[in-house]
Amino acid sequence: MTFNGWLQILIYVGILLVLVKPLGGYMTRVFTGERTLLSYVLGPLERGLYRIAGTDEREEQHWTTYSISMLLFSLAGFFLLYVLQRFQASLPYNPAGMASIGPELSFNNATSFVTNTNWQNYGGESTMSYLVQMAGFAVQNFASAATGIAIAIALIRAFSRASGKAIGNFWVDLTRATLYVLLPACIVLTLVFVYLGVPQTLGPYVSATTLEGAQQTIAVGPVASQLAIKMLGTNGGGFFNANSAHPFENPDAISNLIQMLAIFAIGAALTNVFGRMVGNQRQGWAILAAMGILFIAGVAITYWAEAAGNPLVHALGVQGGNMEGKEVRFGITLSSLFAVITTAASCGAVNAMHGSFTALGGMIPLINLQLGEVIVGGVGAGFYGIVMFVIIAIFVAGLMVGRTPEYLGKKIEAKEVKMAMLAVLCLPAGMLIFTAIASVLPSAVASIGNPGPHGFSEILYAYSSAAANNGSAFGGLSGNTSWYNITLGIVMLIGRFLVIVPALAIAGSLIAKKTVPASAGTFPTDGPLFVGLLVGTILIVGGLTFFPALALGPIVEHLAMIAGQAF
Image (cartoon, rainbow, N blue to C red; front, side, top):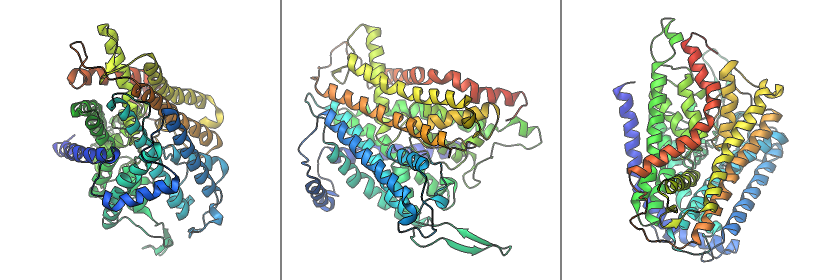
């Protein structure tokens, strides 16, 4: 660990914090229907889209109608993406002549992108045509991200309104998230990435002659446009198999910084949107502070572990940190920071191979996934995910002081706590049950690339990544099999919709309640005490659940490394 390394980390955190208020203010105006600078250009287009769809922007929906709209939209996206893959060979914009995709992999990919997971059991440049990458994956990158933002806004309305029955209009929230937030930002990011050297072309792959005289095919394509929404929408699916470790997706340190900022930007700003809409920005800062504490702790441990390196390598006379699986242009600091950022959000893009990290360095990204990615989290998903923990923390606080728990004047009762626990517990159920089965199923074990605890960590990471809708992989696990394509797809669905539907049920319940004025006995939720309670709740409820599994994987691997054994 070096001063220069910590300076880079602090610069990243500083720039991110500077972005929170202006972006949060802009998004608040968008979702409250106020005019923005873009309204003069996009307003007529927005109204035209509503007329085509037969939607009245003034007509709001009950939480059940909102949920059904979201589910039908996601189902339609799934079928469209599935069909595109199955008929890829017969469709245009396929200059490399890619074959059609089999049913099991098509199911996994369609589920992956619709759930904002972007787990990849395929090599992008060697498997998918330009049309599938653009009309399929890139479109779902927008759609799934906009869906997450819409759910977060609906939940915020439940706390911000005194009483009512409707939580908003899904189609309006979806349209505004896409039209005013994601699309303009991605246009700017795409142009910036092209300027930095990221390809953006519909031309065929390029043939080149190497210094040895051999012929090499260099994959290119519409990379920059997909890269922008992959990061800003916390999707993570790379145009290239190597993802953001590929020089065409991540040419240098500047592009790397922009990508890291894009991953966290909207998720962090949504906490400010929450504070503004409930009329107390300190509430948003308190939630962001809890996220920040967990984030900084994760960065510190990962950076320390990777900078310390492997004692088995040191014994061979090679000193320094662990550079295995990392790009020289990013080094240990930016590789460690990127790994924590991408797993703290539901992004899954990688600029280094997490399976090549030290045992403890790789454990932090795994824990980030298992906490439900509430440390900023995915766009929208991170916010409504941490609200589930807020409800549990408030319930615990109420039990301790003998009062009916309340948050922002809304009483937290049995229904809200049950829905929150359902959302929180569905994730470890998906992660641990399928990991246990895969660990003893011969066909699943055969996909492991490494023996011992590291192999177990590969399986655990895969299902944790799927349930957390992250999409990054530990490496070493051959996931393109019938078992993993189907079961990972099922876990992705669990991790997405068994969290969203309870969150909307909570929104529907809370919005019907009248706001109770604060009293002398009201627990303050905008100060350090609440931040500490929330962090503790996340670590105890979310973290201790996985300790036995972590003990079988990275913890025992670390102890074995100290004892002189490698896997």
